[in-house]
Image (spheres, rainbow, N blue to C red):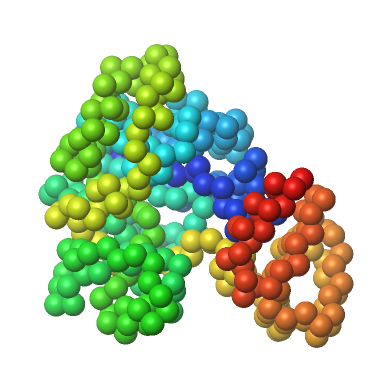
Length: 354
């Protein structure tokens, strides 16, 4: 394995649309959402460790999840944890992790990837990452992997590239915000739009140069602690200074401003597992399109449902179509799948009243 290859796993999200399984105390990346015997973060770590040395994989998360990560990833040592003392979106934490990597290896090339996504063909994924690594090492570029859209999804951002670009790796024309349905259909029909999966590849040098150019104040804030990184004094410096960083995503901070942004259209099947409906798509289903995780079910006139319980609970359903049925601890959720985006709002109400 190449000692210059590094990865940063983003594992700080809450996944509130997967309530009541995913909670602030125990988010979805730490659950076996697919019933495979591995949690999502375990699957992601295992996938990346086929290309990247395990000791070169860092996990970026909130400090309240430190013990949970180390418990689920026993090959990780505490020094590989990058802990956020406050929520400040993706740009500050990526800058922080990058400076830590630079101090370890200034020649590093790195992939930044969410820890809770579903990827079908892992060999194709690793081949795409390798191609992006090769490109990033040859020239100063900010790379991303774009997903071929299969339907006009309004829940993802899009990446536009020039239709006439016949290269395998394409120069990005612009990033587009989450569209309405009509615009999403136009994107799909155009043929030169990709879903933004939030997977980035670059050398340490390239991305730090971009931070210096487009986010100089943020760079100065974190670079001031460079001598402390990977040392015992790091924790005190970060706890004092992290909250001073702007709350801004890596897309807004760098990707939408830089001219040297390129995208590789992915050759693997991908799903961000952002909602119960997206999970339903990826699970095995019975002849009536019902997906079941853990439960033992008796179903009559039941179609298009996703049913998840703790292990071996018996569930009897008659006359239900297109519903989410989730039983966990002291909460039972029975909710229309078409309204799944509202679960986040329901979660806040229930949590407030408990």
